[in-house]
Length: 110
Length: 354
Ligand SMILES: Cc1cc2nc3c(=O)[nH]c(=O)nc-3n(C[C@H](O)[C@H](O)[C@H](O)COP(=O)(O)OP(=O)(O)OC[C@H]3O[C@@H](n4cnc5c(N)ncnc54)[C@H](O)[C@@H]3O)c2cc1C
Ligand code: FES
Ligand code: FES
Image 1 (cartoon, each protein chain N blue to C red):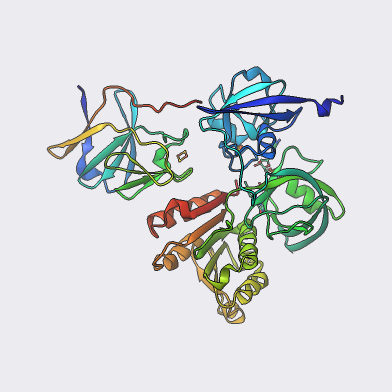
Image 2: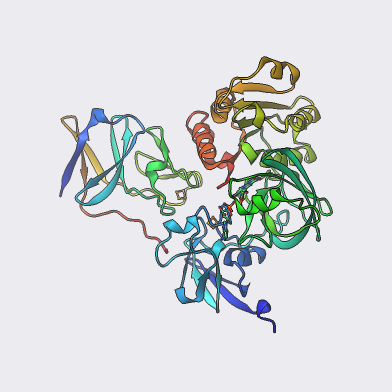
């Protein structure tokens, strides 16, 4: 089990999208109020970087076809056809940590 | 058999189901599928967005027609753009989604056609209204676009219809000249009345639907005004303004770019008060005399999406929003509609004029 520190919680504003590299793996961090969500950087739909998307701290929207997900559990909202995969996160003494054991990737035909 | 008539079988394989269509020698895979009623994925249909990527079972069988297409930059080595490729022999392509049939009788599949340019009116040095008379009946929903090709330039260009033609009607386009653009240079450099061009359409999903039952918010920039006019024409034909309001926001840089003021006034008057129209200048203040002389329209200063959102935030129920124009303007408007106006994405229809 490898927890990696990615910065202090007060460096994240609500809905802010930030890409980091952890153990050689790209991870997208999203400010979610009390903590931070950590997800793969690409959209589960097509190869669109979600860092170009938008987020209000609760809902994440991909700019390409406007799929949306709940940030607390990655569940799809509206037209979205697939959930987000999520890395576990925790806040320890004001530091955000994410659990990266292996890269989370979406199964795609192409 | 002439070479041009040779055809190949294109097998379209989704995760669970498979469909077969013909693809003529040299024909774009996307257009072959669409004309035979398969709802293949696309956005621009002209090689810029990357939306129509697919995976062939045999890459050798695919021939790119425009290898430098910007939309291909995101393609993996195994992928190709369906709108910029043809096939040389019978081929299977794989899609991430199930291939669906276009089954809506109100939206027949797009088709090839030819049309004569019957009139070109210059609204300014770089914007023209072009009327085409198609040689076969053509109809579409308000807001759809067609692909156009001329003998002098490679590939197709996409243009939104600025009217909502019924079979037998001419098609109206609003075309903005692009610096060093091949098709627009061809169109603007000489009198092209009487010239024949080829087209494919109708295409696009950013249109009024027969069952639409909500207020309309139309946010467009530059030549995106064509989509706005297509939607408004459809709304008038469908008597939409009897029961619903509409708000049009047109973004331009300065007063010199504020074309179509008379056309917009005409729509405002035709709507019996249901349509309000705002023209936003992003790079210049609004001269008082302009506002006084055109009291049917509201003029504002600022980016069009900011001006629109300041209004739309106050709405109690979500309108159906249409957004069209240059990609950064479209993305800015979508962002503002979702983040600030809380409009659900399924209420937003858009075309990026990429
Ligand atoms: C859905 C949609 C609707 C649009 N509606 C309008 C509209 O109503 N009014 C308007 O003014 N503009 C509209 N546009 C933009 C328009 O399609 C053209 O990009 C523009 O007119 C420039 O054409 P051009 O030939 O002058 O420029 P060019 O730079 O010569 O070409 C521009 C486009 O042509 C295609 N192209 C270029 N070279 C090739 C090639 N070798 N093979 C194949 N394709 C090639 C590409 O799509 C390229 O982006 C729309 C775009 C889209 C996607
Ligand atoms: S690529 Fe993200 S919604 Fe389609
Ligand atoms: S639809 Fe083919 S690149 Fe846009």
